[in-house]
Amino acid sequence: MSLRHGREALAIPGPSVFPDRVLQAMHRPAPNIYEGEIVDLTETLHADLKRVARTEHDSAIYIANGHGAWEVALANTVGPGDTVLVLESGTFAAGWGAMGAALGVKVETLEADFRDPVDPAAVEARLRADVSREIAAVLVVQIDTASSVWNDVAAIGEAIRRSGHPALYMVDCIASLGCVPFEMDAWGVDVTVAACQKGLMTPPGLSFNFIGPRAWEVHEQRERVPSHWDWTRRCRSDVYYLQFGGTPPTHHLFGLRAALDLLLHEEGLEATWGRHAVLGQAVRACTERWCTDGPLELNVIDPAHRSDAVTTVLTPSIDADALRAHARDEHGLILGLSIGTDNGGFRIGHMGHLNPPMLLGALATTEASLRSLGIPFESGITAAIEVIAEATPTGAGR
Ligand SMILES: *Cc1c(COP(=O)(O)O)cnc(C)c1O
Image 1 (cartoon, rainbow, N blue to C red):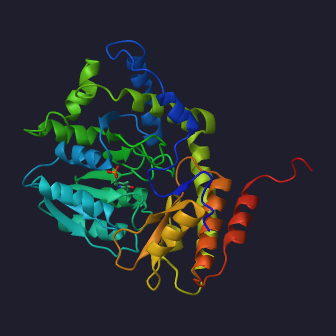
Image 2 (image 1 turned 135 degrees about the vertical axis):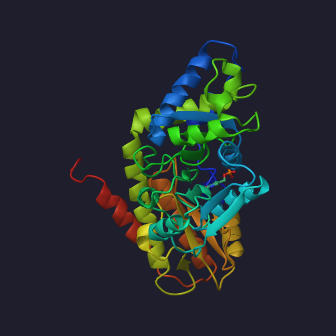
Image 3 (image 1 turned 180 degrees about the vertical axis):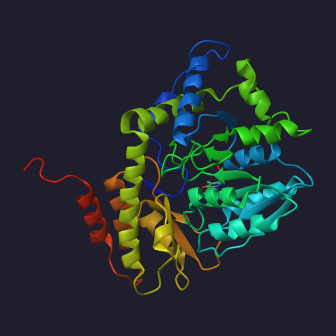
């Protein structure tokens, strides 16, 4: 018997759930792309994107997914013969580095376990040891969506500054922008990479580079940059058409406008961070119980580095694909599949347009599937309920 015939619940770490208002904003005829509304709207998007990334500097919008924005950041700053230092904490920084290798860049990796964050002291030591200043850029991911490790971007930035090394600091915030605190300028980040389909609640297709002054200096010294990716053409041209290197992604821009209205002007960025913090705490309260005993295990060992956007649960001795299939086919819940680990597992996305009924529904339904399959675990849903109850004011309506 299947119970899945209501609205399917997506609990994967991207794409996240799209607000109806974002979808409705996209349901309209094609606009004039030469002048008028779309041109003005794009200007408001840049202003608001920079508010989300907490930077006074530049933003560029690309018609691409996150992988595209990775390549943009590299193609504008490094090339054959340059070296980048990849700070591992999962699979995504390594994937970004591999893209550099394909561009002829030498990739050095500061290796770490899939279950631990980047160690800022190790970054400082590695940069101090680079006396000939070979390393042109340091690449890190704020929240690694595979491992669910949450790196301390501020502390790593501080370590880079302390080392006195001039390498650019480039951060992938694809899974974390609009979910958790990020301060591009205050934390000394030179390039921020993001995409629209996770915390920014917009169907996949747009991605972003935010560019600080030190990154511009490096960029301006490069002899060759692929013209379609070129930051200068995107950011320094008065011609609207060149901002997108061609036709603008009209409907994505309308959708993003609606998403940023929700994020910045309705809820507020800091309130959004606060909501993710409470929901993340609820996920941890629940999943930590699941993992006290038995076959389930939280991937991230240090509780302080378990993220507020995604949670990776390892299942070394059970078939996680069977669990996911059961949740999907019998209960209408889509869980994320595990990537980057041989241990098996699943992931729960808790980013973006998400509230307690959605989250508690996903957690409780996962418990129902675990039970249906006869997998032993301690129930954690009450602990999640307690977190939600304690975070919201009491007394009103009594
Ligand atoms: C999703 C994600 C990516 C890849 O983005 P795509 O849009 O799938 O190309 C890269 N890095 C992180 C941290 C992500 O969460």
